Length: 138
Image 1: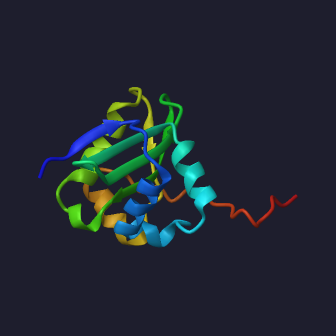
Image 2: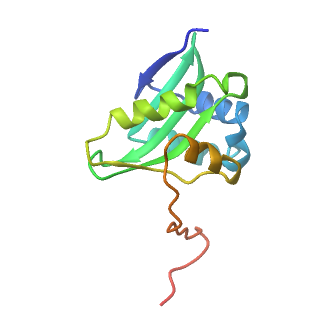
C-alpha cells in the first residue's frame, strides 16, 4: 500500500470528519458540530496528512509557534490503516517541521498512554484544562 505524506495540504472539513469517524478519535471530538470542526481544521497552522490515493487516511493536526511549543491536538489514523507506522511517521514529520528547541506536546486518550511512552514521549502530569462552561475564579 502506497501512502503519500503531505505538509499543510488543503483538507476539507468533510475529509477531516470522515477520517475522525473512521478512527477512534471521532468518539472524543464534536464531529456533529460542523462549525467547530471547520474551525479546527482551518485554524491549525501545521497539518501533516497521510493519503492513500485521494483518500485521507491519517492526520497530525497542530497549533505551534515553531520555536518553543507545538501542541499536537489531533492524531488520527483510520482503523483500516492502523498498525502500519502511519501515526509514527505523521509525528516524525510534524517534529521535522519544528525548530531545534520546539517541544511536541499532546494530551493522550487514556488507552493511548502506553503507545506514546513506547515511542519516546515523556509523561507530564502538569496539564490543566478549563472547560468552556467554567469561569476563571477570583
